Length: 216
Image (cartoon, rainbow, N blue to C red; front, top):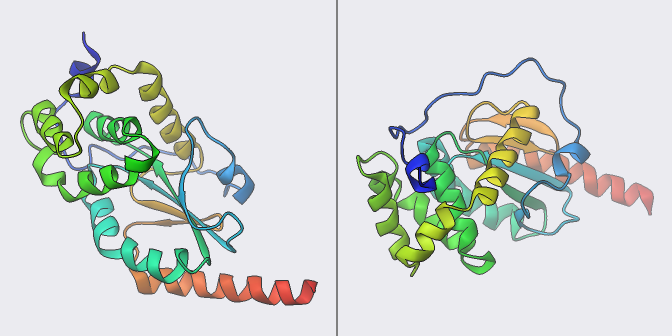
């Protein structure tokens, strides 16, 4: 069986299932930030006082809503101003999401984010249609990816294993739905509004400034 047949061999749904988890202890920020099997895709300075980790699935409508409607304002207000370091991590719920994440990684660092953005914005065109292979190949054609490179990427077993390993690590932290955010180690589930993000982030930034002043 070709790898692409394995990836697209299942019926596509927006969110196939939630992963069952046992009651887990809250992971430490150090554990959450430890290097994983794939290079981190992050925005903002490493020394930002607030660290946010998002676990997302490319076929999840709620993740698309966050990416399209909330992320731009969050990035402008907190990431671009150096208050937040934001890390995006793969948590695919189905083979098509895994394929999308693999293809974005195969595009290289410079084109990774534009590809993620494109896949979210065209989600209805490929995530839940009958022929996922051709639909996703068509979307990736917008990036300039050839059919040969498409096939090569989706037969990369090592990359598929690495994407799966990122999700497994997320499950070990208690992630069982998407999007899930860890804000300085504290789990928040669902598509948070920019107002809710501000309610959480602003006190953390204030506390960090006060701590910094006390240390001087």
